[in-house]
Length: 193
Image 1 (cartoon, rainbow, N blue to C red):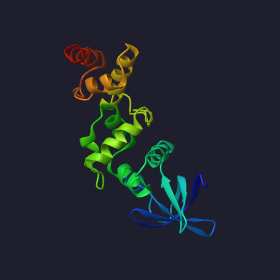
Image 2: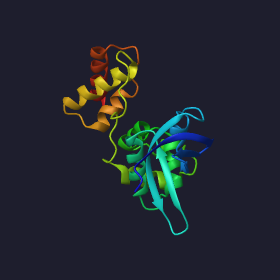
Image 3: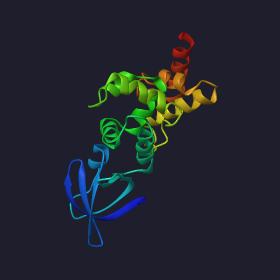
């Protein structure tokens, strides 16, 4: 298994890249979330990879983070979901957005991804339940709305609310609220449900 690749970025043709690793050009397919964050051609790049071996080809998929690769691998475990569909899901939404959709059981968010119908979306929600975590990615800048949301989410979880309830309470909070006020407002939302 090829777990990581580092080299010079030679070509970018969405969704495929060519990376030169000591004279060997590797073709790597990446989700658009990774593609948009790539450096210019000629610069060094490092990607976490997943190798798929088929009868007719060896296909290499690359990701900017281990978390993205883990989500890709979880998607591949689902019956009827191949590498192309998994790439499409990760191109259409971030891992955090996918995890939130799973926790909140929002099939409509998944059906917005090209190639994902209602039945596939429902199967993804069922199969991914409990396998993806929300907010385990990069930490937001201190004082940002995302940081406040994470603090409120953590507070609600510490108070004994489950992840789904907590995400529901946090999703519509105004970004300018201080953490204490945001917690109080989230608790009001939870008391009404």
